[in-house]
Length: 281
Image (cartoon, rainbow, N blue to C red; front, side):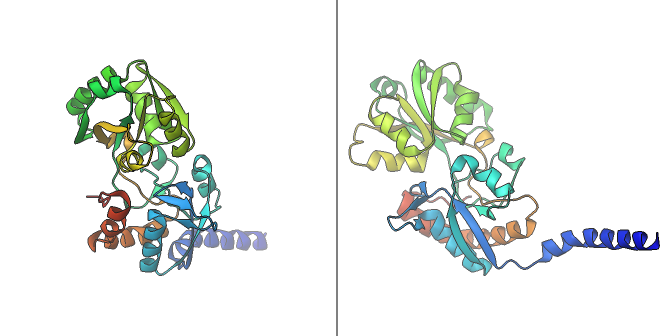
């Protein structure tokens, strides 16, 4: 009986002590998952190595954190479940910080600021929705309603392409459902090919992606149209995804990102790649 009691006491002490030990444990290596197919954020080179803006930024952050970082490719739709299953330590894959995702994983401070807009080569849409450099917060209800009225008038009975599992799906489902037909794609390449082939009337994506798209050979007829939306269900920007319990890893990334913002590193890395400064404000 005494042995059982003592064993129970020891177990209670060990269990109570474990979270503090885990929190204070020094991190020396971090395995980061990325898609390896979301250019220019991340992509796979012919030799099999992963490159891109997020890889360059991750290497800079890891240097500041004084940890060794390695990268692994993971399909986007299974990325969050695999993180929570312990297959890797962090996600850097243009992962927008949204309320829905924050229910299941933790996030670092944002390292990229995004807004969503539209691209089309459909003359009817172009006549109703002009190029527009304004940025509209979905938290601003009057501005959002006015802009959505223009979108619905331009997109009624049209087919819009989105990336499966991303903020674009949530936007169309919430604001354009019933006025347009949505077609989801696993990769931006497949979506963009269907736009060029006329199987889509319009696509929705982050502005940096669509600006890059219209520059590519063969896309001379494609134009970026309409305002750019951010905030609300589209999230707070792009951050590093971590398990909720890994607060020490989150703190390391937060500090490194703050330093990279302050000294201009994020601007230095993003402007040559995207043509815009993605530094969060």
